[in-house]
Length: 386
Ligand SMILES: *Cc1c(COP(=O)(O)O)cnc(C)c1O
Figure 1 (cartoon, rainbow, N blue to C red):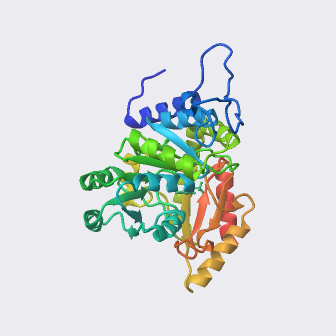
Figure 2: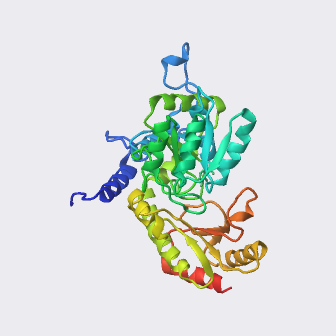
């Protein structure tokens, strides 16, 4: 076997080997896969602190193999939650102690994070939506008030790429915790903690578990105090991952590096072809625009994930744009209609059909699966012909 030569080769080798092996026992008689451990509690007597497990909302071995693999992939400690949103909520709550901090969010980011931030407003937690490329505005916002800088790169659904190392420097200079939502790239393609993030968030529902059969989320961090606060919030707020979902998520995670490399290659190819198609006005994929090509290649050297989006040419306003996009989505025979992303089967949707989404009315978001890329292109081209 040849030695890894570039940082990109090293990340690839690390991700493939770690995902395949993390948490496996070597002792003779060990099971080849961890058991599904379904238990609400563990037999005990006297002081509960004397045993590692008592009540399963506080701690259970059911999460441990998954957390150990997720932690190994980010060279950190990981915690799993009932969903990506549950992980976001616990992380926000854990970072907002002891001071009251304002949440700084990227304007074009995931709408679910904005909806959560809107709900938190009634608990006196304010948030501000910023253009994360406007560094002057960012510096002003960070200086104005204690803040949590909450980035997402690439963003969902416009696939903007933000300079995470630069954002980390800004956050550290202001003493602000720096969160990266790493759901689209996952730790197999991008390592936010290596770039200076305090915590890396992932919706395991999407690519990480990758089989469209569960909802779960995770946080990885190297900060022991933050980890203890996350544990406290998870136990008391109670949004825990089920034993069966944890088992399924680990089963999916084993093949994440393989799947996401193939999906990234296909997504980049389809984005290039879409950008050149006469019916397409704009296609969005990290590195497609010359402006962020070098940054995308530096930050995600092995590929940029399964998600792309595009907009059709229309001359008659938002209503017509939405109708045209709906017709394209409905015309596919292979690409499935539906939300979410990162599964083995390709799917797409007109994103603005969700009421809180701020994407352009006609934007179609495509999650590229594991099908043959030529079959996918034939289907997309046929759907675009109508
Ligand atoms: C889906 C998603 C989430 C939320 O995760 P759930 O598992 O649906 O709760 C958070 N961030 C991003 C970028 C997402 O795409």
